[in-house]
Image (tube, rainbow, N blue to C red):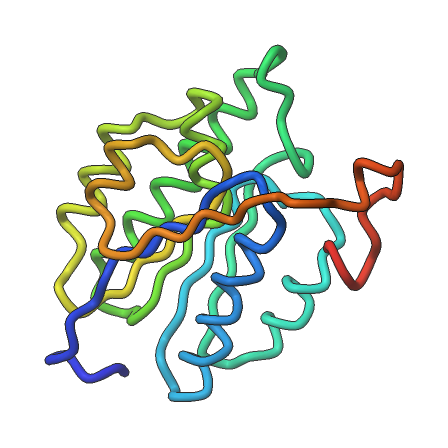
Length: 177
């Protein structure tokens, strides 16, 4: 496990640009190389065939949990099942953070779950506050709430300058997922 004397921080990767999950997974790759115990919860990638899930499942020190029924919920048409999936994802993340078993915990797309009102900001902020001092916590997703940004130690906003999606190019297997 990571040096328990090391201060774990809270990082947020947000913004409309590409690279939020990629940045978090870069941190995961680095930590895995130092034998850290890592837990990643995917809030929306439950049924998606994602390269990152396939790759990361091969690391013995990385535990993955996927929730959600589709890559992204429709904020205008949230189902009770989607709310329940998000609630379960946050509960799994909370257990991982407080268990003492993990050095790094990633909540992928939790900011979107917050923005869509699938989980409570108070619950996420409580998790941030109650995080053991040695645990590194990374939260990703667009539309991070300002109160979450204030609670974080590191905030990076990915800014979209140009994106292939704007020209009609869909997400590509092996690059975007």
